Length: 483
Figure 1 (cartoon, rainbow, N blue to C red):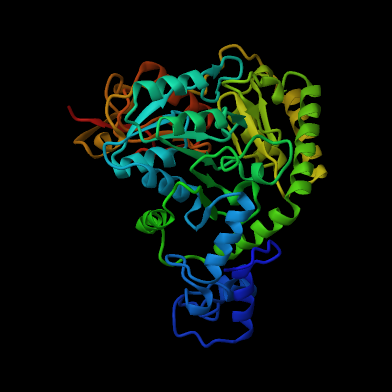
Figure 2 (cartoon, rainbow, N blue to C red):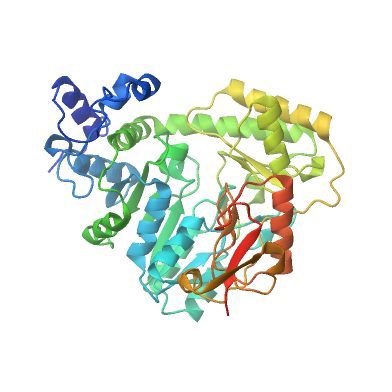
């Protein structure tokens, strides 16, 4: 049995040893340590392409790890307080889908909030499970969806005793947390699994005075986006599982969709980043929280902006709030969030995470410094001075309750026809429409198209939201069920 020592990074160590052996490569990848692609080597550097290698005995195999990858997973499990951890190289999308595909199969019901990332509903398209949506309440001023109320979850469980799992966002994109411990207890009492989408909650495992993490709350599985707040390379993630989950079955599910050519760049970045957070996470996220708190205070002092925080906590729909999140309501300066997003990028060279119809999110994490925060605050003050307008007539709603008519799989694969989008009212959608980021569907397969939804899509498009999802890349036509 391996000694658990968080100072170690076994994949990184094995790659370092591999480099010094000067192995002659008669395997893939074809660039052969960068020699065959000098332009790529010049761009990424010899160190990087030199460890872009294939699975082999000394480096283990992601599909069936027995040595260094297995050790890295055991270290990750201990660091996150999980029974098992799986390295994921297809992003948190892949982790979320593997979690949902593990928990349910065709015809099974799963209880979940409707403001989930598209990856959750994509998994339902793949496996034919039936969503039972708990429609979150909306903060009327901010226009954002809140967490799941305990009573809503209890009612959904009572009305659907045959459901197999409950899924929770921990936190939402905006930093809002549901009462995860209570939901875990309700799910377990009903014989259901509790799953957590923690794409935006990696830091909960390592910081202090932050909302509870899924594993600490007793959840059965969690998808953790290490590349977001944890500092690893884009597309690298962890899937965590508790004692009640069959780890061998989870591995089989992961191997249904995950690549057989796992990237050692991504895996070593997970390994090194886990070590960094295990050793230094408390101080790192203390600094991040302090930066976010400072930024909130400074932005609120500008006036008209509202950088919201823990004052929203009500003990139920907003059970807790992630203080590292810098979410800012912009409508009172007369600009949609997406307009502020565009101005920041185009005129101030500041790239924030996203803007929706009423809010922006500046993602603060492991690599941020005070000088960048000061620059953002100054830019927002100047944008107010230069662009402040009349807020009347701006749409506020970020979330519209869906009318679900058919399961996502049924609708996605059903006979369909394409109609001009503004002629689809009353029809049942057979594809996704969303602004990305944040990637929460405005419409998902199986939902009825209403006047309010079409108004929202038109307005979001006009304001400059990046719309994705439909087969028609121009979003002029929409596929609907051909009934």
